[in-house]
Length: 177
Ligand SMILES: Nc1ncnc2c1ncn2[C@@H]1O[C@H](COP(=O)(O)OP(=O)(O)O)[C@@H](O)[C@H]1O
Ligand SMILES: [Mg+2]
Image (cartoon, rainbow, N blue to C red; front, side, top):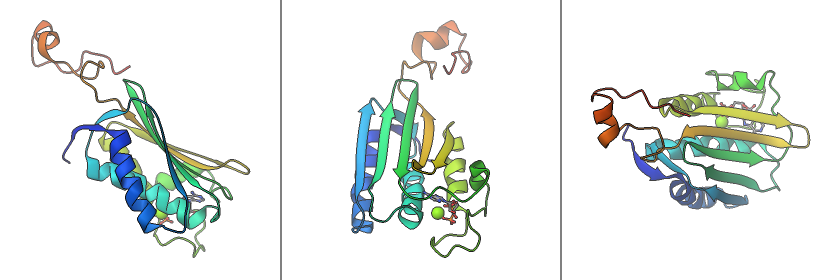
């Protein structure tokens, strides 16, 4: 992984522009709120976005928009993908994050083998983050990836005088709030 300090709004906005070209028949929206700085690998973030968007295209209501949102505060940043349509046919839905699990084993709708959401979870974890899904009749499906905010001074890192105060070498005494 090649982590760098990134503006999630900007990385996602660029990726959405490419997804719009990949899925010209679909309406993709990007909504952003707050301040979304992360310490992350940009290519991996694009993958984290691409999987749920691909799923939304494969399994969601074809004539309804797919909404991608990025939002954040200093210590917590979110990337979410929402689609309308029938809910995920899996119980419990959290099982979908296990490898090779598909909602409907008979389904011919998607193109995958059930690894997509597993990869999303592994990438989220590699960034100190988590992934959640909520799906129901009438509300559609929403995937949310939560990442720690990556801004210097957010309490995520120990630098400068704080490191000296801690006697150097100690990286974990500031809480991750
Ligand atoms: N947006 C969605 N709407 C409905 N079902 C979904 C959605 N996203 C994922 N699923 C269900 O979750 C399963 C697992 O997704 P994924 O890990 O991407 O594997 P794959 O797409 O290869 O089947 C899918 O087979 C599908 O049943
Ligand atoms: Mg998939």
